[in-house]
Image 1 (cartoon, helix red, strand yellow):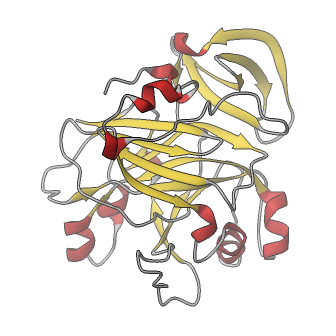
Image 2 (tube, rainbow, N blue to C red):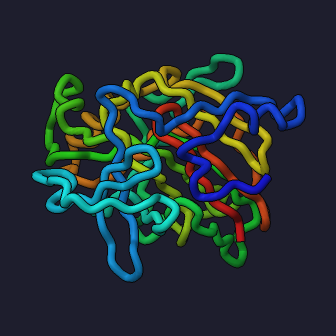
Amino acid sequence: MHINRRDFVFQSALAAAALTAPRLMAVPRLMAATPGVFRYVRYAVGDEAHIGELEGERIHELRGDLFGKHARTGKTVNLDAVKLLVPCEPSKVLGVAANYFGPEGQKPDFKVPQLFFKAPSALLEHEGTIVIPEGAEDVVYEGELAVVIGKKAKNISPAQVKDCIFGVTCGNDVSCRNWSDSDVQWWRAKASDTFACLGPCIAAGLDYDNLLIQTRVNGERKQHERTSKLVFDISAIVSHVSQSMTLMPGDVIYTGTPPGVDSIKSGDVIEIEIEGIGILKNTVG
């Protein structure tokens, strides 16, 4: 199924209905105007990177600091005329392991969120190509909601977390299972180049504690769950991290993946769709 750059903006239910029965799904008009919800992108025009606010298929260029003071410049550009970049430039990228109830309702046996690092150099933009490194034998997709920090956060309580979050985006925590099983540390299993897919935009103003996540591989739905099923919710995760390290504006936390993870191979097209955000699409090279 071919999907162009604008599919994450407006996908019609008619196109979804054309799928075969096991793949049937309703795809909403994710980028239609939603009161109180703002969507931000980083994009390139030629060799220049910009930040902007997305409205429909138009990007309003912004000047200033995305996480501080910014304003529209008055310039706009069509979405299909630009290359979307990773929507932020984090100083650090973290992920949470085993953070959804199992298929039969099993709860992972952890008293606190279990964190690991993904390198900023692993980040990959919407429509970028996932590269499987030599020696990686069991590489899997992991569709996830990713949180983007908006202000400096240190030693904050769960009640203070919402004030420190800028927004949320779609993430694919690509992982190599044979390396995570064989290595003492997960540095290459989780942080190899292109293993941190992120985008297409950051959505601010959503109820991120109850969003639908879907993962499709070559059009076939593989994951389908709501963020309300997280074992440790976003407030618990961010508060816990802030007790040990200072989170800075732009930092990213992948919040965990629901059941349905499977291996990927060259040529596969992976889409992570999250309600109210859009579709993050990547192809395996």
